[in-house]
Length: 276
Ligand code: HEM
Image (cartoon, rainbow, N blue to C red; front, side, top):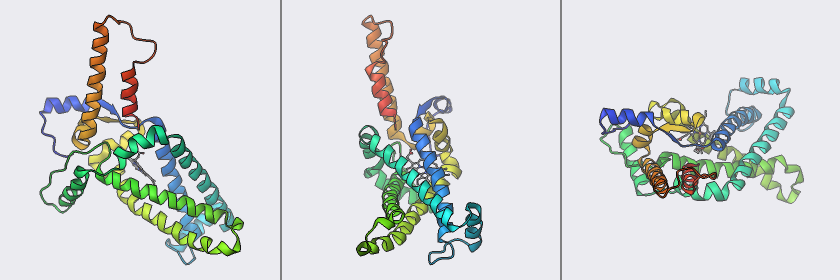
């Protein structure tokens, strides 16, 4: 874990406090996406096997083709799951665009001065030089950079996948579109997979990020991890919590001893703020 200059008692206290980082919809979408990627990658590489783009040992293609009963049904499975995956991802994006993507996209993706410095400092850390990582938001600069790779890659994969799946509807004069779709599809997948190697290593293996891994199941991280890895987010979280508490105290002082039947506005705001 990165340096935390706090007394032990305070660190212990922070470790016991849990903060919500991901909501259920976010967790379900993420794991649906991960499982889909595993399936589409395994089947896609087997479809490519023994062709110009062969990237896996021929044995892999043979095994997967046999499991699915031949190349034609394998392609059908790949296309059908690909369409289903594309529909769920697009649906989530469109439905959550205003509530989730717009307000949080900016914080998740926009790189600020601290983020640029984070790349420099992290580079120094990797080569064993002295470093001081600047404070980060709920996603660090590396994660933000990965989100561009995912977004651009997924758009490319869906468009080229649609062109190939519905190639029979494309007129002869536009045949070149289908021809270009295949290498473009392959390139977009390769781009995301390159980022995924780091993403999965950081998420599932790297000890420092273990709390982030568990948060992808429970939705929560302990406050010590948030404090040491995502200080800007931690500070905003604590401020929003304090504001809510002050509001509650003010309400109590004003004589509203009993809670409203509706959740207080500030709770909703806090929830919205904490939501992904
Ligand atoms: C075994 C596979 C995977 C593991 C172990 C994994 C792990 C994680 C973890 C731990 C986080 C939380 C990071 C944090 O809160 O700081 C995360 C978030 C994320 N992952 Fe993955 N991931 C996997 C597969 C994928 C795949 C296949 C994609 C996309 C192609 C992906 C895209 C993302 C994105 C965009 C986020 C940030 C947005 C969000 O909170 O959902 N992940 N992943």
